[in-house]
Length: 105
Image 1 (cartoon, one colour):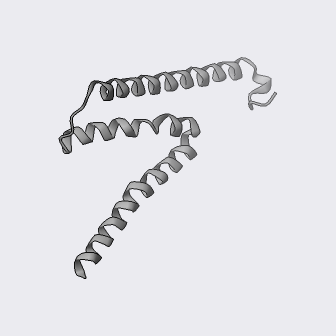
Image 2 (cartoon, one colour):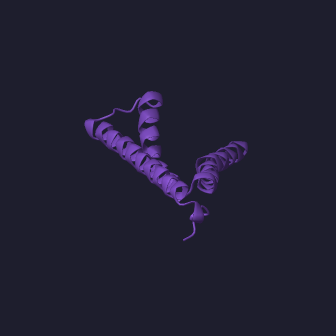
Image 3 (cartoon, rainbow, N blue to C red):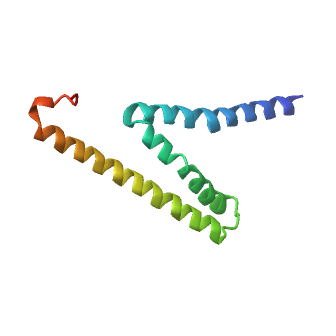
């Protein structure tokens, strides 16, 4: 009976850590930086899972996993680069037009 209680406790802790922590971190990031960053960084979890699975569990990485990770990282970089350029463009437009500096036209 004690062994069953131990397993239930272990699975509850794993559930809280594996689902509760990412959702709370996503909420904080969404509040601070917006939904683009949460959406962009979600696929990065798969890259971390592949790296940790191969290093800790000894799983074999195949070419498809490595290429997929590279595509995910490049896509994330492109999204962040585009968002940065968009913010810079908006900052330049607002500084050029002092009459509408509050962002409303």
